[in-house]
Length: 351
Image (tube, rainbow, N blue to C red):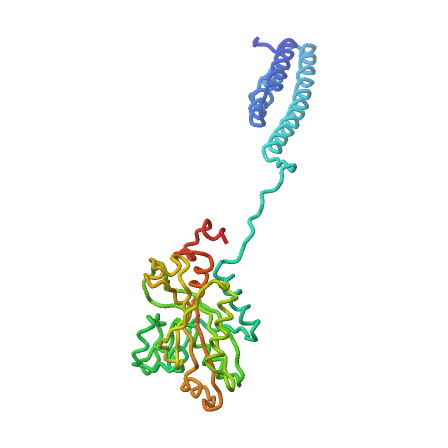
């Protein structure tokens, strides 16, 4: 630049500013351009500051041209700023756009767990035979879980259940609360509050402190059944359970009743189904026996009836309790109970 401002300098600065403004790529570069040309130390500002050294006529001409150039460049700056803002907004919209012509991602549908389905199917069978459905607490009192089922303290039958006790101690030092080891406590609870006739099934979860393997879990599901009335006999029990087996497993499945001991029934039996895996020849699932026990049953013990205030000379009844997981394994051809609770969707989606 010459030492003295001139019209030529004003035109050169204006032309240079216009070229750089058109080439500005973003908003930040506009601020740099404004400082370079219109700021306190900018090229056009310096021309305006040096006008005092010019003769009056030349000062007016150059000053007018410089002011016109400043106003024009300020207007051009705002126009370019708006252009860059629009371009940035368009780029943002393009980057964030959604193609509404594409189909949406499908939402996976939930489904019932195979154990839940099996519980519903079992209870539907007994509901069709006139039974009601009740549920009970999973945290139970020792009184209902054992005492009222003819299993008093120190009775060796308590060794049949590996009990998970709740960390609660009464004033007398006893531990009266536990995770129920079976659904049978509901027999006493229901009979305490119900006058005969009683016909009810109780689905629910039970807990035992034991090692897991292909046929055992520390938590599992049962369906308890109870019927009490005048004149109920063992043949009524067999009839109900044969109907259950026919409806759940089909006519081809073989059923076996065998004498067994349960403190709260007399006489007691276990009911077994021939092994689905080996057909009765013996395998790992059935322990080589050819049969898989699915429930225990029997006639309600007179002591249990009398413990809830029933007249055992007038009323009789039968009770049964079945393992839901084993029934589901039989029906689905599943050879390991642990698969139900591994949360492997590849397994669960098969059902």
